[in-house]
Length: 501
Image (tube, rainbow, N blue to C red):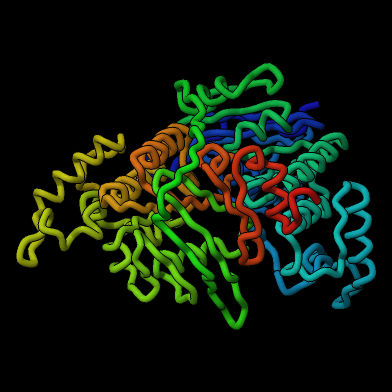
């Protein structure tokens, strides 16, 4: 039985057509994937379904009944629940306080804590999503916090459940537990919509797939009858072979040596006595669940964060040097947030490419910038890195996420440093750009550069890395290579347990 039916969904933002006559149907008991590159219109479609956006044209039916949502409250009342990628929780409150917020059991102004605890227990037991109702949310693992988000939707009688990139912050073991819970919910007659870009997960857990491209449906596939190559073709319109780097074991002296590095915040060591090396011709990946010190470690290496211990680049101790001085010694840096830290969005592509080299003789003379030289350099890199842009003079903020990331990576590679530090190289980037970025990093490794990569995407780390370091509670608890570089082993270390436990 079709539980959700969306017909002719259209939505414009000025001249941009985000959704152009989209049809989507999901049956009771079905897990349905919604896929597409950035800007394909997935988020717009789901925001319409959840009542966050008003469509220009639409027909939405749930259980055969026509719906017209004025707000998320209307969608929730109709049985639509949404688990957002960024959790909507009060960390200092308990599980039961979060679960019953705005739906508190009791009489008048009095909330029945006992009744609320019972709701948590009963829902958890019914759906295989048990949580201690008295736990503080701030103390929960990420996977358990996500479990709470699902229970919140179920407590409001959701029949249709939207899961937006639900595995982005999970360990492999937590991901597998989520899939078990999703199948259980589907077996009870719910309709689940999984919004994701991770094709192996779609193949593993879904029944049907809708692929969007440029605001339209470009593919409607049955999971058991399709494959990764067909899904990618529907997403980008061409074949994109997977990138897997041949693993190497370099023997040269380290290009980056970190010794006993610690970073403290409010008296707590968020990076705790970390020691590791990265050698020329090697990609070292750093894995870990969000919140275990990865950003602070990179900030300490690049000079953005005060720290104790030693950072040695190309044989020189740079621990007391500024960011600019470390860059001059030999470090290129691609930050996690390309909008806030990696670029000046209102400045042109050419200006952004010149950042960091604007005092060199190639692009300046006697304190004056050589604008033609800057623009010529930008044109060269735009062509070399296949950046889709009208010209080098357009604001970089007008580019898609993938093209903006290509510009940042182009600038840092052009800097010529022997060490590249890169965070989340392909977060929010489409399939075609992922392929290009991965091949670029592997090519730079093969030229002899040392590369340190931090990524929340374990598939990406396994594809790129020669070694993987696993962080837990500010420490590096494991250095893995060879046959030990697999999801199960890495996942166990990410949760703080020995690989053999």
